[in-house]
Image (tube, rainbow, N blue to C red; front, top):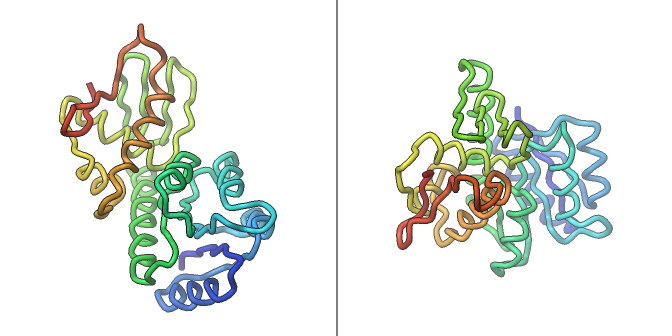
Length: 232
């Protein structure tokens, strides 16, 4: 049974989420503050976090930063819940490292679908690590190791979020093939993100900053105007 930590300072939302997730067969832990959430994560095994942005004390973005900065927790899937629906807020959440972003008020069926999609991607990667032989892609000074889920630039380890890694691996494995934003959303996020193609642009921008050194070095990810992206 998978364990989900639901973090929200609104009790009725916690109860609604808890009731429906338990009905789906998940074990649910609850926290009403960022401090309480971090304590739970330190002491119990959690498979996914539903994290409200607006929390008293330590807010959700800071909790997410601490999760991504913790070696034991940095790969933990996190879905950010928020009443902020503007594009800038979505970009902030994605840049900090959330695996998904859900705006309040949200439907229970949509929440469950997104949880299952994130879980499916996460579980699939762990199974591959256990069963496959070491899978590496080496291009110039860039090395992508799917088995170990690691990326190095000039021999230096680069920290990527779960979705950043999946996006980079997909493009690198299919060098020269152009993917539209919708293609990438479907393949990396696992389902249709209607109207959320900005998500892809944010992740591509983050990847470029992390893996491309300067103008004298190769440009790996190229924009194909009017279409999408490809790995050169």
